Image 1 (cartoon, rainbow, N blue to C red):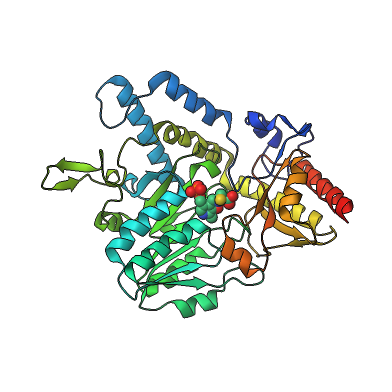
Image 2: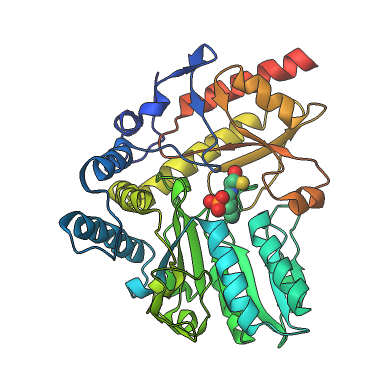
Length: 413
Ligand code: C6P
């Protein structure tokens, strides 16, 4: 396969060699994997880290004093340090391993929400949110008789910041928005969103699920209160991710789950809690996947986030230009600043049918509402076809996507 890189410093041919899964045929054709916003593929360094862990030093962490337990604990904590540096947090105590962004939002909604939200308070989310950044806040609002306010989305697929300003008031206690939209790719002006929220005394949660693999993240510069990412979208294993929280907030929040590890002392009368971050990490965690997550972050750091973004931006531009000439195709989400997500509909053809016909050609895309039903309602559509690009994708693959779409359009019409 000709794997033309898009004028970046990256050698995509070499990068692709790191991803064994890409080198297979699906339905008789070379696999073209364009479903990276759902989950990215994993490089050998990540796969090998998992194998090495289970072959060499599988043990429970923070408990045993034997050699394997110490090795496992050290590796687990090394990922925490890498995670801290990855988002420029100031301390490992601010990094809590979770199962991913969904669990991180539930943790904050449950712990912070239960402790600090009161009747008639307001929580602001946006019209671009994934269901996991809607439903947990609905739980809190229902329980506490608080209200949920929603920042509207413009026709371009961007947040209407003037309307956001109008929603903010002394009643606003939490603002929770994504850094980048999974359905449209829009990169939100989160620094401004955070500043405005802080002016009224609200705390801000940033869902970084779609930013983790693509964007520079500096939580100190952003001054966000909480920030969450998922490993599996960042070339790492499934089932893990981390939550950043400002230490002073995490300290005053009650624990989320009770059990081993999160305690200092337990009696039948009273339990005292462990220090941060362990207060929020009850039970045996997903050790192997956390250990291998370090290799995923090293992979991203090794290539350089600027280089990754430049490559992916080139792919997005190329794909957007190429599909715009296709009959009946509408790009949904034309924000000025986007991560590498291209969402579209084609007149008269259901997204699901397009997805199936592309799959028959070995091309993997996602179709449907992408867990953002209110956003689809905003655009008056049931769903879109979403092609999302990663660092190992190529212009040649986009040509294959476009060729597939041309054939589908000609076949149906
Ligand atoms: N979006 C997609 O195909 P988890 O599943 O917990 O790792 O992440 C949830 C989540 C939260 N916020 C955003 C912006 C997301 O994109 C996702 C996951 C995938 O778009 C699977 S639905």
